[in-house]
Length: 415
Ligand SMILES: Cc1cc2nc3c(=O)[nH]c(=O)nc-3n(C[C@H](O)[C@H](O)[C@H](O)COP(=O)(O)O)c2cc1C
Ligand code: SF4
Image (cartoon, rainbow, N blue to C red):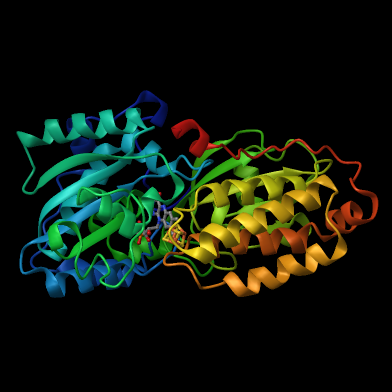
């Protein structure tokens, strides 16, 4: 990958484990210093957008926190990563912990924070161990701001930013009503920057390479690089770094190609959208199609897309924090009816009801959870419309109903 030195995964093989502080420094040099909030303009000019799902411009977020900080802001590096197929944040924490810590310290300096937390799922011990060891290594050498590690429950909504703040304030990791948003009043009532792990690693690269080089590393309308997790029917599943704006065809090829004929691609993880294979190949990541959590799942021909969609909507319904009616009851109804469609027990009017409910629920949760589920379901109903018709007519289609993308029952495990 030619990205002019703008890369998160350059250096020793990621399979070798955590890069030490000495290795990190000899490869990249010392963490650069910036006076006041001057890095914010550089991050802005680089065009960096958040990699936790919403693609919000990072420089704007830093400015909002800095304006309120008065030297007491908190930086939270969000490494919850409970998206079932995603592995990028865990990989960065496990293999490049010092790049992430550089990003945390640079962000802290830019927003005038005096405390930082790395927030990691309770299921990701490897990542937590690596970053804890990296913090210990730095204590002697380069740790101007106290950084601690906090663990999150492995539930889908635990990484939502208000849930992160609630957990760090001693409550449950469930989204809360906003405003105030974390940048206004977050951890301990202080202005809080909640930033995805990958976003922070990019900021550390931008601080070293500059905005122009970062922009040039992207292809065709995008800046910098992207981490994607390739999943399902692909020869080499796992995390890849690609120039931003790469097409889905390029991502598939970089992961060794699909294992067979492809029916559809799920782009962006379980809040992402299904795209029919023929429409997918030329889509540019982060330009024509949102990157979301960076997961690209290849769905093969011969499987029932409707059954897969029903399983995923069931997962998202189970993962509702159960606080808002449209989310708790709305997603449950969508999940039940989609499952009935997949099982061949639904009637034609149920398909219309699904569309009606989707329109009614849209925009009505306190957080983005239901909207994410709606994007997934409505795109599935479009892309797998043929399966829906067949199931309504004949009860089942002749495809394999077994699912290929996981839809775990974390709620049952917690009981
Ligand atoms: C239900 C839900 C779950 C989320 N989970 C994560 C997560 O695991 N990691 C993450 O970085 N962002 C997650 N987000 C997005 C965060 O709320 C927030 O936008 C993000 O951490 C901000 O960082 P960024 O600007 O660098 O993307 C989630 C959002 C929602 C609605
Ligand atoms: S929309 Fe769902 S996940 Fe979000 S706060 Fe409401 S109940 Fe919780």
